[in-house]
Image (tube, rainbow, N blue to C red; front, side, top):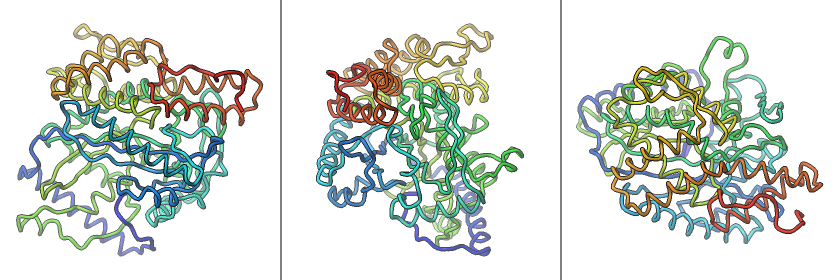
Length: 504
Protein backbone atom coordinates (compact mmCIF):
# COMPACT_ATOMS: atom_id res chain seq x y z
CA UNK A 1 0.00 0.00 0.00
CA UNK A 2 3.03 2.27 -0.08
CA UNK A 3 2.58 2.79 -3.82
CA UNK A 4 0.94 5.99 -5.00
CA UNK A 5 -2.70 5.27 -5.74
CA UNK A 6 -4.96 7.79 -7.44
CA UNK A 7 -8.49 7.85 -6.07
CA UNK A 8 -11.39 7.31 -8.45
CA UNK A 9 -14.33 5.09 -9.15
CA UNK A 10 -14.24 1.60 -10.65
CA UNK A 11 -16.66 0.05 -13.11
CA UNK A 12 -17.37 -3.59 -13.92
CA UNK A 13 -14.81 -3.72 -16.73
CA UNK A 14 -12.10 -2.54 -14.32
CA UNK A 15 -12.84 -5.48 -12.03
CA UNK A 16 -12.93 -8.04 -14.84
CA UNK A 17 -9.64 -6.78 -16.24
CA UNK A 18 -8.05 -6.69 -12.80
CA UNK A 19 -9.09 -10.25 -12.01
CA UNK A 20 -7.62 -11.36 -15.34
CA UNK A 21 -4.38 -9.48 -14.58
CA UNK A 22 -4.22 -11.11 -11.16
CA UNK A 23 -4.37 -14.54 -12.79
CA UNK A 24 -1.62 -13.53 -15.22
CA UNK A 25 0.50 -12.32 -12.30
CA UNK A 26 -0.05 -15.56 -10.40
CA UNK A 27 0.94 -17.58 -13.46
CA UNK A 28 3.97 -15.33 -13.85
CA UNK A 29 4.97 -15.96 -10.24
CA UNK A 30 4.64 -19.68 -10.86
CA UNK A 31 6.91 -19.45 -13.91
CA UNK A 32 9.54 -17.44 -12.04
CA UNK A 33 9.52 -20.04 -9.29
CA UNK A 34 9.78 -22.92 -11.76
CA UNK A 35 12.64 -21.19 -13.59
CA UNK A 36 14.48 -20.59 -10.28
CA UNK A 37 14.83 -16.90 -11.08
CA UNK A 38 14.84 -15.75 -7.45
CA UNK A 39 17.67 -14.17 -5.49
CA UNK A 40 20.19 -16.38 -3.71
CA UNK A 41 20.46 -16.29 0.10
CA UNK A 42 21.65 -12.88 1.29
CA UNK A 43 20.53 -12.92 4.93
CA UNK A 44 18.70 -9.61 4.49
CA UNK A 45 16.29 -8.17 7.04
CA UNK A 46 14.29 -4.95 7.22
CA UNK A 47 12.20 -3.07 9.74
CA UNK A 48 9.24 -0.66 9.64
CA UNK A 49 8.02 1.14 12.75
CA UNK A 50 4.70 2.97 13.13
CA UNK A 51 4.46 5.91 15.52
CA UNK A 52 1.93 8.15 17.24
CA UNK A 53 1.94 11.91 17.61
CA UNK A 54 0.78 13.34 20.95
CA UNK A 55 1.00 16.66 22.77
CA UNK A 56 2.49 17.39 26.16
CA UNK A 57 -0.92 16.58 27.65
CA UNK A 58 -0.71 13.04 26.25
CA UNK A 59 -3.56 13.65 23.80
CA UNK A 60 -3.28 12.74 20.08
CA UNK A 61 -2.17 15.45 17.68
CA UNK A 62 -3.66 15.32 14.15
CA UNK A 63 -0.75 16.86 12.31
CA UNK A 64 1.42 14.30 10.54
CA UNK A 65 1.55 16.45 7.39
CA UNK A 66 3.09 19.37 9.29
CA UNK A 67 5.55 17.10 11.10
CA UNK A 68 6.59 15.28 7.93
CA UNK A 69 7.17 18.58 6.17
CA UNK A 70 9.62 19.51 8.92
CA UNK A 71 11.30 16.08 9.03
CA UNK A 72 11.79 16.20 5.23
CA UNK A 73 13.14 12.65 4.97
CA UNK A 74 12.02 9.81 2.72
CA UNK A 75 12.56 7.45 5.65
CA UNK A 76 9.42 8.89 7.27
CA UNK A 77 5.98 8.51 5.68
CA UNK A 78 2.33 8.97 6.44
CA UNK A 79 0.21 6.24 7.92
CA UNK A 80 -3.57 5.84 7.98
CA UNK A 81 -4.41 8.39 10.69
CA UNK A 82 -3.32 12.02 10.87
CA UNK A 83 -1.73 11.22 14.26
CA UNK A 84 0.42 8.44 12.71
CA UNK A 85 3.87 8.33 11.13
CA UNK A 86 5.94 5.42 9.84
CA UNK A 87 9.72 5.15 9.69
CA UNK A 88 11.37 2.66 7.34
CA UNK A 89 14.87 1.38 8.04
CA UNK A 90 16.96 0.37 5.02
CA UNK A 91 17.58 -3.39 4.69
CA UNK A 92 20.52 -4.76 6.68
CA UNK A 93 22.43 -8.00 6.48
CA UNK A 94 21.74 -10.19 9.50
CA UNK A 95 25.02 -10.76 11.30
CA UNK A 96 27.74 -9.04 13.29
CA UNK A 97 26.52 -6.10 15.41
CA UNK A 98 23.42 -5.54 13.29
CA UNK A 99 21.08 -4.97 16.24
CA UNK A 100 23.32 -2.36 17.82
CA UNK A 101 23.63 -0.69 14.40
CA UNK A 102 19.86 -0.66 14.02
CA UNK A 103 19.44 0.72 17.53
CA UNK A 104 21.76 3.61 16.74
CA UNK A 105 19.95 4.37 13.47
CA UNK A 106 16.54 4.27 15.14
CA UNK A 107 17.58 6.44 18.09
CA UNK A 108 19.10 9.01 15.77
CA UNK A 109 16.12 9.07 13.40
CA UNK A 110 13.46 9.10 16.08
CA UNK A 111 15.30 11.73 18.11
CA UNK A 112 15.44 13.99 15.06
CA UNK A 113 11.77 13.39 14.26
CA UNK A 114 10.78 14.10 17.85
CA UNK A 115 12.64 17.41 17.82
CA UNK A 116 10.91 18.39 14.58
CA UNK A 117 7.52 17.38 16.00
CA UNK A 118 8.23 19.61 19.03
CA UNK A 119 8.29 22.61 16.68
CA UNK A 120 4.52 22.18 16.35
CA UNK A 121 3.94 21.20 19.98
CA UNK A 122 3.83 17.46 19.35
CA UNK A 123 5.97 14.49 20.29
CA UNK A 124 6.49 10.91 19.17
CA UNK A 125 5.24 7.93 21.15
CA UNK A 126 6.01 4.29 20.31
CA UNK A 127 3.06 2.31 21.67
CA UNK A 128 0.63 -0.31 20.36
CA UNK A 129 -2.49 1.85 20.87
CA UNK A 130 -2.35 5.40 22.24
CA UNK A 131 -4.38 5.16 25.47
CA UNK A 132 -5.86 8.64 25.12
CA UNK A 133 -7.53 8.05 21.74
CA UNK A 134 -11.30 8.52 21.70
CA UNK A 135 -13.95 7.57 19.18
CA UNK A 136 -14.14 11.23 18.18
CA UNK A 137 -10.48 11.08 17.12
CA UNK A 138 -11.06 8.16 14.76
CA UNK A 139 -13.42 9.64 12.19
CA UNK A 140 -12.99 9.95 8.40
CA UNK A 141 -11.92 13.59 8.70
CA UNK A 142 -8.79 12.40 10.53
CA UNK A 143 -7.64 10.04 7.79
CA UNK A 144 -4.32 11.17 6.36
CA UNK A 145 -4.75 13.34 3.30
CA UNK A 146 -3.54 10.67 0.87
CA UNK A 147 -5.61 9.29 -1.99
CA UNK A 148 -4.91 5.63 -1.28
CA UNK A 149 -6.36 5.82 2.23
CA UNK A 150 -9.57 7.51 1.10
CA UNK A 151 -9.93 5.01 -1.72
CA UNK A 152 -9.26 2.00 0.50
CA UNK A 153 -11.79 3.29 3.04
CA UNK A 154 -14.42 3.81 0.33
CA UNK A 155 -13.93 0.31 -1.08
CA UNK A 156 -14.00 -1.49 2.29
CA UNK A 157 -17.09 0.48 3.37
CA UNK A 158 -18.81 -0.32 0.07
CA UNK A 159 -17.92 -4.02 0.32
CA UNK A 160 -19.32 -4.22 3.84
CA UNK A 161 -22.45 -2.21 3.11
CA UNK A 162 -23.07 -1.19 6.73
CA UNK A 163 -21.33 0.34 9.74
CA UNK A 164 -18.43 -1.52 11.35
CA UNK A 165 -19.10 -2.94 14.80
CA UNK A 166 -16.32 -3.12 17.37
CA UNK A 167 -17.08 -5.60 20.14
CA UNK A 168 -14.12 -6.60 22.32
CA UNK A 169 -14.58 -8.32 25.66
CA UNK A 170 -11.51 -8.16 27.86
CA UNK A 171 -10.98 -6.87 31.38
CA UNK A 172 -13.82 -4.54 30.37
CA UNK A 173 -16.05 -4.62 27.31
CA UNK A 174 -16.07 -2.16 24.43
CA UNK A 175 -19.01 -2.04 22.03
CA UNK A 176 -19.28 0.74 19.47
CA UNK A 177 -19.78 1.35 15.76
CA UNK A 178 -17.87 3.25 13.10
CA UNK A 179 -18.85 4.41 9.64
CA UNK A 180 -15.27 4.07 8.37
CA UNK A 181 -12.07 2.04 8.76
CA UNK A 182 -10.42 4.90 10.68
CA UNK A 183 -10.32 2.94 14.00
CA UNK A 184 -7.68 0.76 12.31
CA UNK A 185 -5.35 3.77 12.61
CA UNK A 186 -5.22 3.20 16.37
CA UNK A 187 -3.04 0.13 15.72
CA UNK A 188 0.66 1.01 15.50
CA UNK A 189 3.06 -1.83 14.98
CA UNK A 190 6.51 -3.05 14.02
CA UNK A 191 6.95 -5.00 10.81
CA UNK A 192 9.96 -7.31 10.58
CA UNK A 193 11.01 -8.43 7.09
CA UNK A 194 13.17 -11.44 6.30
CA UNK A 195 14.28 -12.22 2.75
CA UNK A 196 14.17 -15.95 2.03
CA UNK A 197 14.72 -18.24 -0.92
CA UNK A 198 11.69 -20.04 -2.38
CA UNK A 199 12.99 -23.36 -1.03
CA UNK A 200 13.09 -21.99 2.53
CA UNK A 201 9.98 -19.86 2.40
CA UNK A 202 7.48 -22.41 3.71
CA UNK A 203 9.62 -23.43 6.68
CA UNK A 204 10.26 -19.80 7.65
CA UNK A 205 6.58 -18.81 7.27
CA UNK A 206 5.42 -21.81 9.29
CA UNK A 207 7.99 -21.05 11.98
CA UNK A 208 6.86 -17.41 12.05
CA UNK A 209 3.25 -18.55 12.50
CA UNK A 210 4.26 -20.78 15.39
CA UNK A 211 6.00 -17.95 17.25
CA UNK A 212 3.31 -15.27 16.84
CA UNK A 213 1.81 -16.15 20.22
CA UNK A 214 5.15 -15.98 21.98
CA UNK A 215 5.93 -12.64 20.33
CA UNK A 216 2.69 -11.22 21.75
CA UNK A 217 3.31 -12.72 25.21
CA UNK A 218 6.63 -10.91 25.37
CA UNK A 219 5.76 -7.74 23.47
CA UNK A 220 2.09 -6.94 24.26
CA UNK A 221 1.72 -3.17 24.51
CA UNK A 222 -1.91 -2.25 23.73
CA UNK A 223 -4.23 -2.85 26.71
CA UNK A 224 -6.47 0.21 26.21
CA UNK A 225 -8.86 1.41 23.53
CA UNK A 226 -11.39 4.25 23.77
CA UNK A 227 -11.00 4.47 27.53
CA UNK A 228 -11.57 0.76 28.18
CA UNK A 229 -9.11 -1.85 29.43
CA UNK A 230 -9.47 -4.75 27.00
CA UNK A 231 -7.02 -7.47 25.92
CA UNK A 232 -3.35 -7.17 26.83
CA UNK A 233 -2.77 -6.82 23.07
CA UNK A 234 -5.97 -5.30 21.68
CA UNK A 235 -4.61 -4.54 18.19
CA UNK A 236 -5.50 -7.89 16.57
CA UNK A 237 -9.22 -7.91 17.45
CA UNK A 238 -9.45 -4.20 16.64
CA UNK A 239 -7.67 -4.60 13.31
CA UNK A 240 -9.83 -7.57 12.31
CA UNK A 241 -13.09 -5.84 13.16
CA UNK A 242 -12.11 -2.44 11.72
CA UNK A 243 -11.24 -3.92 8.30
CA UNK A 244 -13.95 -6.58 8.16
CA UNK A 245 -15.68 -6.44 4.78
CA UNK A 246 -18.13 -9.17 5.83
CA UNK A 247 -21.63 -8.36 7.05
CA UNK A 248 -23.10 -10.80 9.59
CA UNK A 249 -24.49 -13.13 6.91
CA UNK A 250 -21.10 -13.69 5.27
CA UNK A 251 -19.47 -14.26 8.65
CA UNK A 252 -22.12 -16.90 9.38
CA UNK A 253 -21.28 -18.60 6.08
CA UNK A 254 -17.65 -18.91 7.11
CA UNK A 255 -16.29 -16.35 4.64
CA UNK A 256 -12.73 -15.53 5.68
CA UNK A 257 -11.85 -12.12 7.16
CA UNK A 258 -9.28 -9.95 5.39
CA UNK A 259 -7.30 -9.78 8.64
CA UNK A 260 -6.61 -13.35 9.61
CA UNK A 261 -4.19 -15.83 11.05
CA UNK A 262 -4.63 -18.35 8.23
CA UNK A 263 -5.92 -21.90 8.29
CA UNK A 264 -3.07 -24.29 7.44
CA UNK A 265 0.65 -24.83 7.35
CA UNK A 266 2.03 -24.26 3.86
CA UNK A 267 4.52 -25.95 1.56
CA UNK A 268 5.29 -22.94 -0.71
CA UNK A 269 4.90 -19.19 -1.04
CA UNK A 270 2.76 -19.78 -4.13
CA UNK A 271 0.03 -21.30 -1.95
CA UNK A 272 -0.45 -18.07 -0.03
CA UNK A 273 -0.65 -15.88 -3.13
CA UNK A 274 -3.06 -18.35 -4.72
CA UNK A 275 -5.23 -18.26 -1.58
CA UNK A 276 -5.34 -14.49 -1.84
CA UNK A 277 -6.91 -14.72 -5.29
CA UNK A 278 -9.24 -17.59 -4.40
CA UNK A 279 -10.63 -16.21 -1.15
CA UNK A 280 -10.56 -12.40 -1.36
CA UNK A 281 -12.29 -10.11 -3.89
CA UNK A 282 -10.15 -7.21 -5.08
CA UNK A 283 -10.62 -3.93 -3.23
CA UNK A 284 -8.49 -1.70 -5.46
CA UNK A 285 -8.80 -2.95 -9.05
CA UNK A 286 -6.10 -0.68 -10.47
CA UNK A 287 -4.37 -2.17 -13.50
CA UNK A 288 -0.79 -1.64 -14.63
CA UNK A 289 0.18 -1.58 -18.30
CA UNK A 290 2.74 -4.38 -17.83
CA UNK A 291 2.07 -7.74 -19.47
CA UNK A 292 3.82 -10.02 -16.96
CA UNK A 293 3.91 -13.20 -19.06
CA UNK A 294 5.37 -11.36 -22.05
CA UNK A 295 8.00 -9.77 -19.81
CA UNK A 296 9.04 -13.23 -18.61
CA UNK A 297 9.10 -14.61 -22.17
CA UNK A 298 11.41 -11.74 -23.12
CA UNK A 299 13.76 -12.66 -20.27
CA UNK A 300 12.75 -9.78 -18.01
CA UNK A 301 11.46 -9.58 -14.46
CA UNK A 302 7.82 -8.50 -14.09
CA UNK A 303 6.74 -6.16 -11.30
CA UNK A 304 3.49 -8.13 -10.79
CA UNK A 305 1.90 -4.90 -9.57
CA UNK A 306 -1.66 -6.19 -9.40
CA UNK A 307 -0.58 -9.17 -7.31
CA UNK A 308 1.46 -6.93 -5.01
CA UNK A 309 -1.38 -4.41 -4.58
CA UNK A 310 -3.95 -7.13 -3.87
CA UNK A 311 -1.59 -8.75 -1.36
CA UNK A 312 -1.33 -5.39 0.42
CA UNK A 313 -5.09 -5.39 1.11
CA UNK A 314 -5.03 -8.79 2.86
CA UNK A 315 -3.75 -8.43 6.40
CA UNK A 316 -2.10 -11.70 7.32
CA UNK A 317 -0.08 -11.58 10.54
CA UNK A 318 2.74 -13.13 8.50
CA UNK A 319 2.44 -11.85 4.96
CA UNK A 320 4.25 -13.18 1.86
CA UNK A 321 5.95 -10.38 -0.08
CA UNK A 322 7.20 -10.36 -3.67
CA UNK A 323 9.80 -7.71 -4.45
CA UNK A 324 12.58 -6.78 -6.87
CA UNK A 325 16.01 -5.50 -5.87
CA UNK A 326 18.76 -4.72 -8.40
CA UNK A 327 16.66 -6.31 -11.13
CA UNK A 328 16.35 -9.66 -9.31
CA UNK A 329 13.09 -10.92 -7.80
CA UNK A 330 12.99 -12.05 -4.19
CA UNK A 331 10.54 -13.28 -1.55
CA UNK A 332 10.16 -12.00 1.99
CA UNK A 333 8.20 -12.99 5.06
CA UNK A 334 6.73 -9.84 6.62
CA UNK A 335 6.02 -10.39 10.31
CA UNK A 336 3.25 -7.96 11.33
CA UNK A 337 2.55 -9.22 14.84
CA UNK A 338 4.34 -6.88 17.23
CA UNK A 339 3.09 -3.56 18.58
CA UNK A 340 5.41 -0.56 18.52
CA UNK A 341 7.58 0.25 21.53
CA UNK A 342 8.03 0.66 24.36
CA UNK A 343 11.67 1.70 23.64
CA UNK A 344 14.15 1.23 20.82
CA UNK A 345 15.96 -1.32 23.00
CA UNK A 346 12.74 -3.29 23.47
CA UNK A 347 11.96 -3.20 19.74
CA UNK A 348 15.40 -4.60 18.93
CA UNK A 349 15.17 -7.24 21.67
CA UNK A 350 11.88 -8.40 20.13
CA UNK A 351 13.52 -8.44 16.69
CA UNK A 352 16.57 -10.41 17.86
CA UNK A 353 14.37 -12.99 19.56
CA UNK A 354 12.19 -13.34 16.44
CA UNK A 355 15.00 -13.66 13.90
CA UNK A 356 16.94 -16.10 16.06
CA UNK A 357 13.96 -18.27 16.94
CA UNK A 358 12.58 -18.43 13.41
CA UNK A 359 15.98 -19.48 12.07
CA UNK A 360 16.31 -22.25 14.65
CA UNK A 361 12.75 -23.57 14.28
CA UNK A 362 12.90 -23.53 10.47
CA UNK A 363 15.99 -25.73 10.51
CA UNK A 364 14.82 -28.35 13.03
CA UNK A 365 14.83 -31.90 11.70
CA UNK A 366 11.39 -32.49 13.21
CA UNK A 367 9.73 -29.07 12.96
CA UNK A 368 7.38 -28.01 15.71
CA UNK A 369 4.53 -27.45 13.22
CA UNK A 370 4.55 -31.17 12.41
CA UNK A 371 3.59 -31.72 16.07
CA UNK A 372 1.41 -28.65 16.69
CA UNK A 373 -1.97 -28.54 14.91
CA UNK A 374 -2.54 -25.29 13.05
CA UNK A 375 -5.73 -24.74 15.04
CA UNK A 376 -3.66 -24.86 18.24
CA UNK A 377 -1.23 -22.25 16.90
CA UNK A 378 -4.19 -19.99 16.08
CA UNK A 379 -5.67 -20.57 19.54
CA UNK A 380 -2.30 -19.74 21.11
CA UNK A 381 -2.27 -16.42 19.26
CA UNK A 382 -5.72 -15.56 20.59
CA UNK A 383 -4.75 -16.56 24.13
CA UNK A 384 -1.55 -14.52 24.02
CA UNK A 385 -3.43 -11.42 22.85
CA UNK A 386 -5.94 -11.80 25.69
CA UNK A 387 -3.54 -12.48 28.55
CA UNK A 388 -0.09 -11.27 27.46
CA UNK A 389 2.76 -12.13 29.81
CA UNK A 390 0.41 -14.31 31.92
CA UNK A 391 -0.73 -16.53 29.04
CA UNK A 392 -0.46 -20.31 29.00
CA UNK A 393 0.15 -21.85 25.59
CA UNK A 394 -0.35 -25.26 24.01
CA UNK A 395 3.02 -26.76 23.07
CA UNK A 396 4.24 -30.22 22.01
CA UNK A 397 5.32 -32.23 25.05
CA UNK A 398 9.06 -32.98 25.04
CA UNK A 399 8.77 -36.77 24.92
CA UNK A 400 8.03 -38.33 21.53
CA UNK A 401 4.34 -38.96 21.01
CA UNK A 402 3.56 -36.96 24.13
CA UNK A 403 0.82 -34.82 22.54
CA UNK A 404 0.27 -31.24 23.63
CA UNK A 405 0.72 -29.71 27.06
CA UNK A 406 -0.47 -26.35 28.37
CA UNK A 407 2.62 -24.45 29.55
CA UNK A 408 3.09 -21.00 31.12
CA UNK A 409 4.48 -18.98 28.25
CA UNK A 410 7.27 -17.41 30.30
CA UNK A 411 8.46 -20.89 31.32
CA UNK A 412 8.37 -22.06 27.71
CA UNK A 413 10.44 -19.06 26.64
CA UNK A 414 13.04 -19.36 29.38
CA UNK A 415 13.44 -23.16 29.29
CA UNK A 416 13.13 -23.93 25.59
CA UNK A 417 12.85 -20.97 23.24
CA UNK A 418 15.59 -18.63 24.44
CA UNK A 419 18.30 -21.29 23.89
CA UNK A 420 16.87 -21.88 20.41
CA UNK A 421 16.87 -18.14 19.66
CA UNK A 422 20.49 -17.92 20.79
CA UNK A 423 21.45 -20.79 18.49
CA UNK A 424 19.58 -19.13 15.64
CA UNK A 425 21.41 -15.84 16.12
CA UNK A 426 24.69 -17.77 16.16
CA UNK A 427 23.69 -19.34 12.85
CA UNK A 428 23.07 -15.86 11.42
CA UNK A 429 26.56 -14.84 12.59
CA UNK A 430 25.35 -12.27 15.10
CA UNK A 431 28.06 -11.19 17.55
CA UNK A 432 27.73 -12.85 20.98
CA UNK A 433 27.63 -9.44 22.69
CA UNK A 434 24.58 -8.41 20.66
CA UNK A 435 22.98 -11.82 21.15
CA UNK A 436 23.43 -11.84 24.90
CA UNK A 437 22.39 -8.22 25.43
CA UNK A 438 19.10 -8.40 23.55
CA UNK A 439 18.08 -11.93 24.55
CA UNK A 440 18.96 -10.97 28.12
CA UNK A 441 16.22 -8.35 27.95
CA UNK A 442 13.73 -11.02 26.89
CA UNK A 443 14.81 -13.24 29.78
CA UNK A 444 14.37 -10.41 32.27
CA UNK A 445 10.87 -9.69 30.99
CA UNK A 446 10.00 -13.32 31.64
CA UNK A 447 11.65 -13.35 35.05
CA UNK A 448 9.87 -10.18 36.21
CA UNK A 449 6.68 -10.92 34.21
CA UNK A 450 6.66 -7.38 32.83
CA UNK A 451 5.99 -6.06 29.35
CA UNK A 452 4.56 -2.82 28.00
CA UNK A 453 0.95 -3.88 28.55
CA UNK A 454 1.47 -4.95 32.17
CA UNK A 455 3.32 -1.70 32.93
CA UNK A 456 0.53 0.39 31.38
CA UNK A 457 -2.20 -1.46 33.26
CA UNK A 458 -0.39 -1.33 36.61
CA UNK A 459 0.39 2.37 36.27
CA UNK A 460 -3.16 3.20 35.18
CA UNK A 461 -4.61 1.42 38.20
CA UNK A 462 -2.23 3.28 40.50
CA UNK A 463 -3.49 6.54 38.99
CA UNK A 464 -7.08 5.47 39.64
CA UNK A 465 -6.16 4.56 43.22
CA UNK A 466 -4.65 8.03 43.63
CA UNK A 467 -8.07 9.51 42.88
CA UNK A 468 -7.89 10.36 39.19
CA UNK A 469 -10.88 9.66 36.98
CA UNK A 470 -10.55 7.28 34.03
CA UNK A 471 -9.59 9.85 31.37
CA UNK A 472 -7.12 11.66 33.62
CA UNK A 473 -5.54 8.33 34.63
CA UNK A 474 -5.06 7.34 30.99
CA UNK A 475 -3.55 10.73 30.16
CA UNK A 476 -1.20 10.56 33.16
CA UNK A 477 -0.15 7.02 32.17
CA UNK A 478 0.54 8.19 28.62
CA UNK A 479 2.67 11.12 29.77
CA UNK A 480 4.66 8.92 32.14
CA UNK A 481 5.09 6.31 29.40
CA UNK A 482 6.56 8.88 27.02
CA UNK A 483 8.90 10.17 29.74
CA UNK A 484 10.28 6.66 30.36
CA UNK A 485 10.33 5.86 26.63
CA UNK A 486 12.57 8.87 26.05
CA UNK A 487 14.84 7.66 28.87
CA UNK A 488 15.51 4.58 26.74
CA UNK A 489 15.79 1.92 29.45
CA UNK A 490 13.93 -1.33 28.62
CA UNK A 491 10.39 -1.62 29.93
CA UNK A 492 11.10 -4.37 32.46
CA UNK A 493 13.14 -1.80 34.44
CA UNK A 494 10.42 0.86 34.49
CA UNK A 495 8.96 1.71 37.89
CA UNK A 496 5.17 1.62 37.91
CA UNK A 497 3.16 4.58 39.06
CA UNK A 498 4.45 8.11 39.24
CA UNK A 499 7.39 9.83 40.93
CA UNK A 500 6.21 11.92 43.86
CA UNK A 501 2.50 12.37 44.42
CA UNK A 502 1.41 14.43 41.46
CA UNK A 503 -0.02 12.80 38.34
CA UNK A 504 -1.17 16.04 36.81
